[in-house]
Image (cartoon, rainbow, N blue to C red; front, side, top):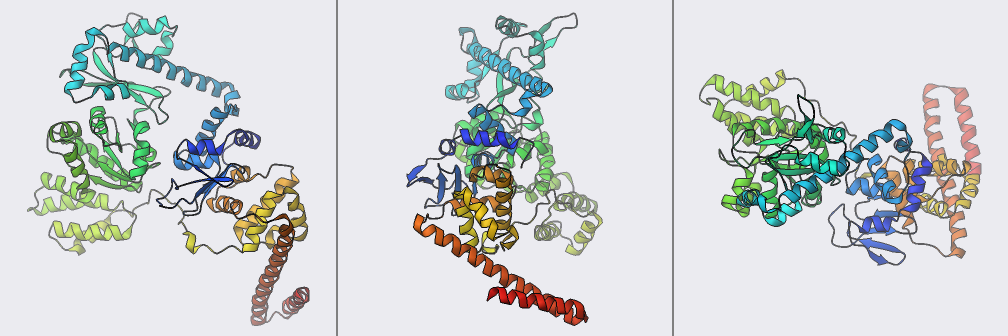
Length: 588
């Protein structure tokens, strides 16, 4: 059972939620007999093979094998962790989770909720400021930066006036305490006592989390005053390095394109986005953090980085490259001319030029090598050594030996030296430690086929709870030759003894393995038999499984007998031969 959420609450949520309603909120479903079907959202296909059962509250794709219940769909489609999916559906169905009953957790949840609401009030206040007669200069500034009126509205842009307490007065009128404003990072304490607005005389960029909740703000001056940007401080709901600006809007486009374009700032994101480049996010002016990369990996493992064409942009890009490699992300880079950023590139040269640069993005190898060539003299032996050392630090982070080999070869060619010497330098470095140690996946075609009798019998047992007791009188879980079917049968047997629910949608909450979930769903979409045919089919399945059990046991004994003969163990040999003869009699 994933997490520490009680089984009865998970069952309660699943009994209240309608998986058809959940999935149809993401993809269009068409009625198909008793079920619904659609093109699978998890792989590209022309013919619909994704089935949803309203009766069983499960889904299964006959193309890629993806299967599950409402929790699993949210986890896969929204890249959520199990507790996140449970929380979303609990809120949708009105189920109170246990954490909400704990005093400390309740206080934390209450504070987070209050901070989100305070931020929403602040967004409305700043937005209104931008649409009063005195805000013409702020609107003109945004329009001069290429931001359209529709974009201003879509991103809820606003204005902090030059007054020191205008936000404070607004929030006070809505009974928001000063302590809460301070915890939200909206106000600062005065040395002599009291508070003043943190953001003044600046354009306001609200920052939303993945669930489109306001968690913080960025604020930019409308002239060249320094600092140009001020951001919200860290709060209980906002940590700059854990969020990506715009991801709440672009996540579906990123998933569909299987690629994310990463830029630095708010305007670098907004200008391309409004011009049609939707699979884009902004790191909010810093090098990417590990948390941001892990968040992005929910939607894609391919990125194109486009940071500003200055020294700071180069440094931020280089820092991000190594982390991306360690996290198994395929990365390319668009190098920009000095003084240019994605915002100005789109405004001055057009979005098609921007797209062309993305299509022709440099490999990370070429990007880093070009930067190093500009720093060190390629004609000098020490310069070559510096370039090689820097490049090898990155190359060594690849856990794929073929990629490392290709980059080694290319580096040797670029610096015009023997590959042998480059390899020698690489061996001086520590062995690369892969960032992810996931077990190798077995493709569906390489997995052993399941005995049809075992699969069909599981279908019958899931459909008729009373049948489980009958089957278990004839068979034990160990009689099922496939580990997946044995695990499912064993769990059903235990749950029946405990008097618990064995609905397919509930059953899969007990499995962390995709194989077992897939098998449960697949059996439920197998064709139904007529009642008069079912009893004979059940008996046939039991009989076949018994035959296979005897056959397997004989083969096992045969091997043991050979081993006993080889070792000269007469006592063990006689016992095994007797057991073998008994099995033959049973088969007869």
